[in-house]
Length: 150
Image 1: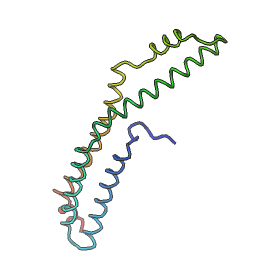
Image 2 (image 1 turned 45 degrees about the horizontal axis):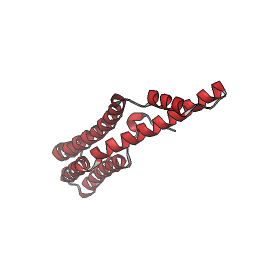
Image 3 (image 1 turned 180 degrees about the vertical axis):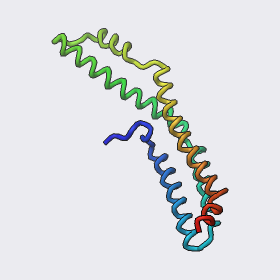
Image 4 (image 1 turned 120 degrees about the horizontal axis):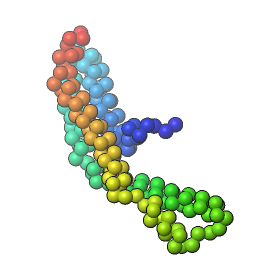
């Protein structure tokens, strides 16, 4: 089963999300166990730290590398399958010049590459914003919310 495009996170993104969720759950469990809602605020600060570490890591640079690799792989696959289809249709082998023409026509433009990079960055920033928001809410309001739930 393939995930929708907006859920295709990198391994690091999944790690940051899982760490955030585990810290949030741990804060609630410890708060109920210790009968002290201040633990949610303390863990909220840890979640913010996870978010900050996540954003200053080398992920933004990796996006461009990843996007370039994906576009290159997709392009090569498209070129090869198109050449194979053309050769099957004509029942002949294309000359190197004809293959080069096909290759030039199917090579992605800079705007297509930029769109792929933009998608990756948008997903990264969405994850980052949610982590920081959850951590800030837990840090600022977590204790108050748990005290009112008791």
